[in-house]
Picture (tube, rainbow, N blue to C red):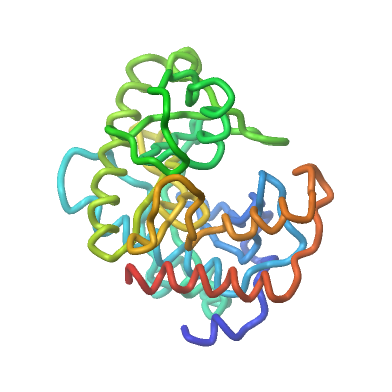
Length: 301
């Protein structure tokens, strides 16, 4: 798959024989009857807006890193099942075979599930929107924090900070109590426990590879038939997480990263207001972002 870094970005899939697709910010989804085909494109979003340029190799990185985590995190007990059936194109339905060259490495067959209307964020460090909220009011998602914390400080214990899942516009941070009113107390408590457990396991594995996972976002759904709670979507990728190089970590400032924070920083530097239409990304920003995604993958796999 080395050619993935040299090939043009895959920003659209139009697989007519597979029926109508649903398109997310990054993924294209095809309904194959008893399962779904998820294809990770090279589209990139920032501040919940899809940018005009794709990042070559990005979809490959998202899929391969998700594969790594689906395989590693479930080696111990204590987690609910995940939605992944297979990432092996040889095991895909026959209808997918004409597209195997494009699908290989960037797609997965998954169980059908009803996504829950919340995103489940676990934070180990004070960064991003959490840092911005803390500087204004001393809280993160309405959770009071000690005074005197610095940007990028490590929390004593990971914080669970859910958000809404906006179909349009920006997601909004919500309190855990608000999450309970949306999906029910028992389900919310179960998701919180599973999310923190996954984060802690992943953070330990990542540190062995010289990476700090500052925070990450998990998504959950209910199996369409059994209503079993499932971990869905991608898992611990540069799109859903902040990855910092451990050997360069220094609290009190923003950190270099292997994720799309590089793109966010560029967009802020040109004064974009985070509303459509987004500005174009210069070629050098695209190249450097692709390199950061590639390095993140190489650190783990």
